[in-house]
Image (cartoon, rainbow, N blue to C red; front, side, top):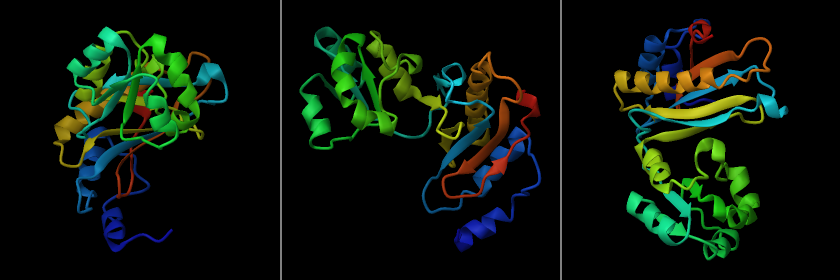
Length: 230
């Protein structure tokens, strides 16, 4: 893969053979974020889980203390009082069945997170083919299927992120922006890792966290020493 000059230069600052401690890794990730925009700092966690087994699936959500630095657009499927509640909580879009053709036929996807009250899941289920592959389907484990739409919307706005295994058993999540201070990124990272460590499946034998890498959107990854999270 051909890398640009900036990437190659930035990569020289990272010792590929070294496993860094958290503070060093965060400082380096900020340093190698050399793009012209405010890059997202991401964490990539390779696990020893096998997501093909239901009892080794990892999925949940956590509120990062300093948010993600991104403005998140929330769509809530709700009716009557719950719809009013969602609007009052700050959801950008609120609706019910009338939104189905707009999403299905017109390809409208101007939102980042979908929340639904349990009674609306029959309606939302019809959008499974559209929302599922994009990771937008509401899920009780992530707190996005709930009657407490106020809390759901407020948490998302405050910096709630969802984590889940991808097909290769890796978890990818943002923990902030390159413009964040090292302290903010460290707090967010610790909050995330505490949640991931707690989510270890009881049936998993062997190593849980195979590797943890922090990287800016366009920059090289910095590998962490995972021993302290074991």
